[in-house]
Length: 367
Ligand code: ASP
Image (cartoon, rainbow, N blue to C red; front, side, top):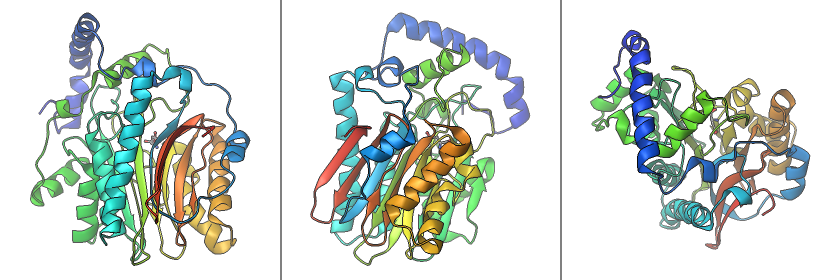
């Protein structure tokens, strides 16, 4: 394994790691680019979007939805995408939606559909989850994931895992086989081994694009609020009218070792309750934790009788209240199949399927 399990050793190795990375960086420079370059798909400056602007772009909930995904909110502008990169994203989003939708069509559960779509995105290096996850400040990968079953309020979550190919599957396994909800780091990986998961080495997660993003962040050349986007999430409503939600991420580029965002925290990054709504959030995790953003949607519907669009927009506005614009977005699917997808960034990778099989994907704020 590339990284030690022992934190002290990791810190001692920090200096050495930086030297090794400098050499890798030279190699990257010498041997050229990957198919998706960081500079192509992520802008390095923020244009001033406001939640009001995006609220105007997404005023109504979409009806008759059974499945939806996001691939992260962030600074997404048409001019930063080549046609090829944009097509790759749209294609991956569509396939992720399809993978969940097909399970629901075949009578599968909302939990199965959520896991399938998130696994697909974890395996795609386009997204910041599983393969292609962003890097910590010492150039490692620490992955977070959570899942919740709205029919039982069962939940499973893992944080800081470094050797699990599909963290969402570990979260689901924990949810379904343990009375515990949340496992961290080494303990989560021991549990994974106990449950028969194969471990992967850290280099499995490595991509040149995220390496470049780390170098950019360390050079201070990025000034967006929460760095690299592409956290993934899914929400589903199955034929038995059960809701589920899940989220998976590598977190934020250059994050401190041990940092935990909202994605693995039930109520912050993920929430599902059959009585109200299933939610998966994306954005500056610290803000979503402080505003308990995903649960806030459910609370707005339960206690203030808000519709899903109003409740989700109110939750995003609360996040913006403490973090300003460009702080993130969410997907929220209510028990009647109404979908809200508010965000206060210039874009959010997203897609959904209706009960009739219509599949829609979008990236930018104006679509
Ligand atoms: N919410 C994630 C985190 O803070 C990042 C993201 O959604 O892009 O870890």
